[in-house]
Length: 93
Image: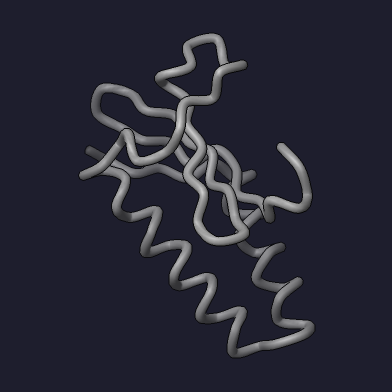
């Protein structure tokens, strides 16, 4: 299964890394690497996240929680699309 990031998800990852780097540059690099490593598990474990009940097809849109972060993604036959990434305290995107 292929993994694709939306432009919004890429911007989310950059924004989170920049925000963390202001306070702790080494933590920013580590957290970004850990988030990406977790995301890279999805092609083998597409149902790792919980279904988003408010989505039109809840089983196809999922939220994976990793520490304080939420990764929203959609599952399709041959591709997983990373939709958004946010700090859980920011609220749903």
